Image (tube, rainbow, N blue to C red):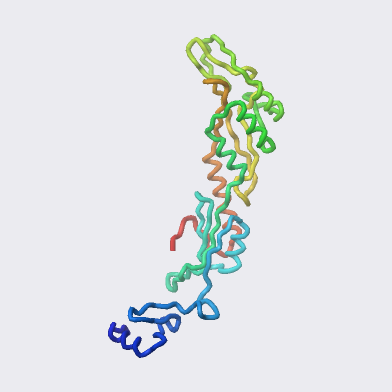
Length: 264
């Protein structure tokens, strides 16, 4: 039954403390019938609500798994994130979606360094610093497929020099670049420099360790420098995202896990 404004004004005038509404959970007060929520004056909330946010894969699965097994989990592979609304309800009895859990996996410092190095050009000093900073993760291979020692690689980068050669050679070596038809610049002792660097790292917290490859090429314009390019990075990202989705799905066997984003 709906009440007219006049009826509500009459009720308000006859109740100095206000008129109850929403089964006693609120009061209508004042000439403008302002709604006052009474929850804060009660001993307990009407329902549980809150937002749990974490970067820990195990923490997310523990929180969701211990509270509402039938709440769906939405997995965003592109963002390496997952979320669940534990009071979502269903189509017949929808919930308020006030109680949520959100996971966003952080990149590791090692993976961040790998991505920052990708598609970059480093001079000799910067290249040496990269190998010194992350050398404990790296393995090196020259253009012949032969392994190289880290100490010798650092020394080779420090001592690399350029030599002008008069040549009509059309072959482009791993560490050389064409300057003109009759003149090319080639890196001395190129076999001592790595053609491929292998990074052994954990890309995101909670995922498995994997090896990512990066090609090294020499650039001679303006002095010796080195270009770095990740090999098959898109394929690696797909594998990492698939691993993440499988870990969440396997870790919450009683929950419906869906690929996608849900906005309540």
